[in-house]
Image 1 (cartoon, rainbow, N blue to C red):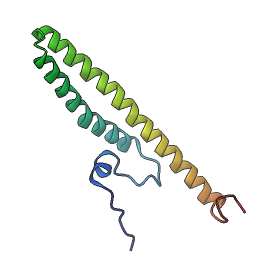
Image 2 (image 1 turned 60 degrees about the vertical axis):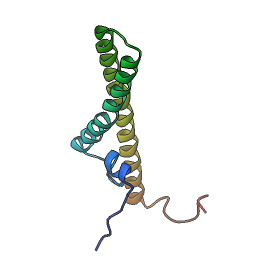
Image 3 (image 1 turned 45 degrees about the horizontal axis):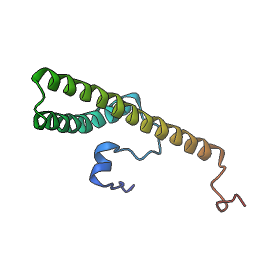
Image 4 (image 1 turned 90 degrees about the vertical axis):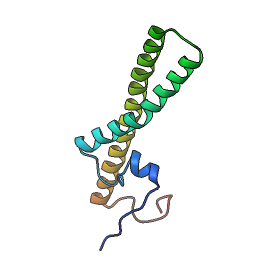
Length: 111
């Protein structure tokens, strides 16, 4: 019987995979969507709060909110894509090492 790994809450929400196998396209899109849905609304609410406190006109508030949302989507979407890409690369390297059997035995200096 395999034991299931337990991660902290934020890890389970932001990246609930072990990293031992490459993520499928659906899993990758889920990670990207979750990052965007968690970080962008908070960033937008803070921007809206600053705009309200600074008493900006409505059109400037909306423009600032739009700019904040779009930049958050781009920034956090790119960061989550990078996390997925690095995880997939590490998983492929791990799988190759398992197949060839190299890097498993010996200490950290290869002897």
